[in-house]
Image (cartoon, rainbow, N blue to C red; front, side, top):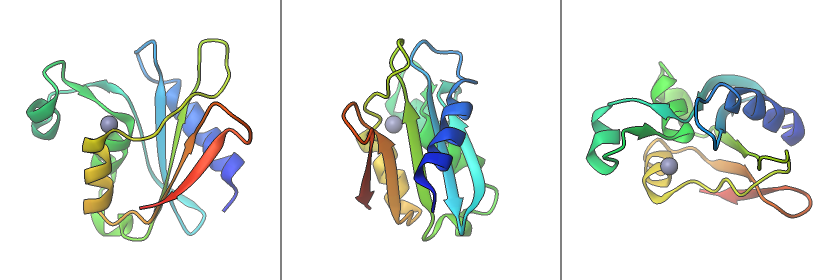
Length: 124
Ligand SMILES: [Zn+2]
């Protein structure tokens, strides 16, 4: 798994976000992208249940966009966020997204952090 390459795909995805804080998530399995997501406005039941602003987080968007949810089992998610000056920023999933990541048995998450090497791996 090439972390830099995967985070670059997550970065590209984040740029689609209409928000000032753009976050991108990519789910990979066996070196292939199986779904992508970015933070956007959407009134999905899971979103509305916890977020009155109806902001769908990138991680949840990537999970919901995956047509075959079984593929998420054992997969790896990469989450990218950058500051306005282009430096990587902390992109650890919020508790709601973490719950969904666990529920779908995603095995590892890689997310950007502010210090070198600018990403961190976590076993879910
Ligand atoms: Zn979240």
